[in-house]
Structures are given as C-alpha cells and as structure tokens.
Image (cartoon, rainbow, N blue to C red; front, side, top):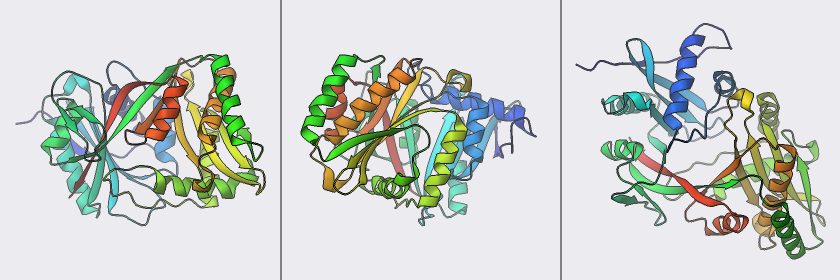
Length: 360
C-alpha cells in the first residue's frame, strides 16, 4: 500500500488566513521541485506566490497535493489563460520534493490531475519540465530542434504517461554586470541600422497610458507568432482592460521591472517591446533576473530593433538594479533569430525546458 495520499487543495485567501501554514509547505515543495542542477532560479516567498495565485488575472487553477504523514510532499496544478475561449487546453505542472522522489508519487499525482482535467473538459494538456544536461541517451523534440536527457525525472514521468515531446526551449544566462562598453556598442550599431524612424522609450512596472492599445495588440500577437512546435496553442487575446489589470498586478507584486519599447516615429505607434524583471531578495529572490517577452511587429522587422531594445534595456536594468548576478532567458531551439541576438550579447546555454503535450 502506498504511504501517501492525494487530495484536492485550496490555497488560503490571504497571508495568515486559514491554511497559511500548509501553504508555506506548498511553496517550499514548489521551490524545491523547480530547482534544477542545484540552482534555485524560480524560488519565491509564500507571500509572493500567494499574490500570484489569488490575482484575478491569473490562469484558472485546479490544484492537488500529495501528503506523507500529513505533510505536503508533492503538488500538481492545471491552469488556463483567463481570456482564452479554448477551455479544452490547459497547462499542467507536477512537482515532487527531491526527498520524496522514486516512490511513485509523481505518477499517481499526474494520473489524478489528468482525471481532474478530464472532468473539467480540459482534454489537451501541456506539461513543461526544466532539465539539466546529463550523460546518457537523449530524446529529440518533434519540432526537429533540440533534445533533452531521456533520464531526467520530469522527462521519464512524461514519457511513462504517454506524453509527446513537442518542443525544447533553451534556457540561457549571462553574468551581471555585462560590459557597459559592449552593450553601448551594440546599442549604437543597432540604432544606426534602425535609422531615424525609430526611437526607444522605457518604463518600469506600469506602462504609460499612451501605449496601452499598442501593448494589448502586441501581447495578443506574441501568443500567435511565438514558435510553439507541435503544441496546439490557442489564441490568448489581450484587451486594454486586461492589460491594465496586469500592469496593476505588476505594481503590486513589487518586482524590479525594466521595459524598453520601440516607437515608429512616422506613425507614432509602439511597434516593439522587451521586458526584464527580477524578484527582490525580500520576496525570496535568488539574484536571478528574467528576460520575458521580446517582440517586434512583423511590418517593422529587419531593422535590428530586437538587438536595440534588448541591449539598451539590459544596460538600463543593471544600472538601476545592481543587486542581481545573472539574467536568464528562454527561447525555442528553432527560434534561431532570437538565439543569435542573445549569443551576440553573451548569453550562454544553461538549462533546457522540455515541452510535452498529451490528448486525454
């Protein structure tokens, strides 16, 4: 008989409310389960994590936990984009604390989560697992770009349950501070190619209202244009109202944000953006900042705007937020254009993310 139980989980409504102590264990398992190769890139405090889960703009969550002797040792959740009309699509995650792996908990938890997804009509599920390089056989992505170790814990779990590896995302990092001279040269070279028709604008967590319409348009396009391999990605529309809610959430989070945008002077439109953000130490941050979306409108590509924005924003971030040691970024292995930009700036491959999909 297994010495663990699986049960639905409901997180507390606020810090210190009923279930708070349990939530602290939940956050600990989450942080430990996401650690890869001894690196805790995605650690955050229970308070910060709860703000995300309780935010009205966050994905619709279903959650399960596995317990041993009453204590949470593994967690699982299924989330949906709040604006999508495709309610059959869902992201899922299963995380087992390293001290409790090898006992069948992950497989049992994934089976239970799939049953819960089916009951909710979520019939296409996508699971992502961070993996470190290790010796031994590898499995190639259906996209034709990238491979991951077949023996990595998350990979073994997904394959054992009939998931297909659709895509591999490369996680790269760069040590801070980057040479200011190198970044300034990259900005100057890119600006010369962009020409006088484009200029940079910057903001932190909250964007000026004059750019809200353009930002909502670009966020919608990003979900359609990003390489997704064989993942059946639904449209995830962004309205101005949704954008305003997201920006308010960012302000409330207390993260360190730096966003650069490219303005097309003849039209006065914002046609590109790139985002950098980090979690301060008092929210559980580990000195890693993350590169989030980088996007350029299709009609304005070919003018080095991606390099211009990324180099200028990286220079700005490390000056304004000197407490960070690394910036990480994640790109599909088939996204050679963005990988070229990152490599030119000095980013180096670090980890990988295996993106699996299954039709239930």
